[in-house]
Length: 329
Image 1 (cartoon, rainbow, N blue to C red):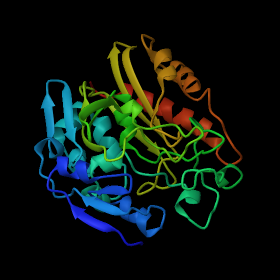
Image 2 (cartoon, rainbow, N blue to C red):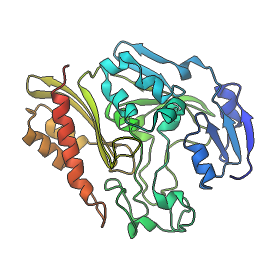
Image 3 (cartoon, rainbow, N blue to C red):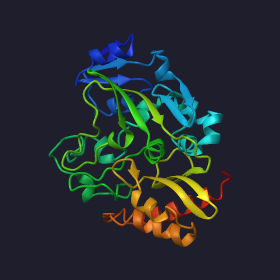
């Protein structure tokens, strides 16, 4: 780990005012410290925000159907919230199935959505070719071991998979991100927070230098019939090979509203709008669920080792849809 300056922020505004392109915010640190030890991230300054007590960053608040979740809330705190579990289980499922108990107790939700890829070519600096770490150097995964890599949202410059789970629920539910920047507070759709790699994989988000995520707002968190299904190599503490965040509203056998986010298969949190269009106002059956799955993966780009994700992703989505339909509303 390289030398860095340390600063403890007295307030969100002070944190933002002192941050620059060489700074990183430190809250739970479960990704930050890991990448610093690997010499992938080399920040000049750490701004510690872990002790901030700003209520709007530390609380879970309800206002009718709307849910506002402070960015400093831990994964464990939201996962254990019984009210959220009853009204919108996809939000809690996706956290219970992520990381380990120890990490969930430490990791804050603001940092969780910004966690970096688990691509070994990115995290191992002995590999020279990584456009995400060293722009213009190439992508070793294209011709290397790419079993865990993305098949949606990829480019010739990068196929690294976004690793998170909770983000799939957020993008499915049209979440909004509240941000404090140098020009003051602003709100943006969660769907615009992450950038597909294109020819600049090193630019992962639309955040400006110093921007601090303060909260997430789900305008409609009344989805009792919702679920997160995660398929992985082992049952615990493993990243998704494929996953699906599904929220349904039914009118008899017909789908009156549906939201779908896919994980483990894309370079960013992925909204399956084509699949939603197939299902909207249709009778939900194995056949229509399969049609939706075909639409969701119609644009997949596969390589030697990750082609299996197309079929696995389709089966994951079909199972998630049918399981969710069987839940009590």
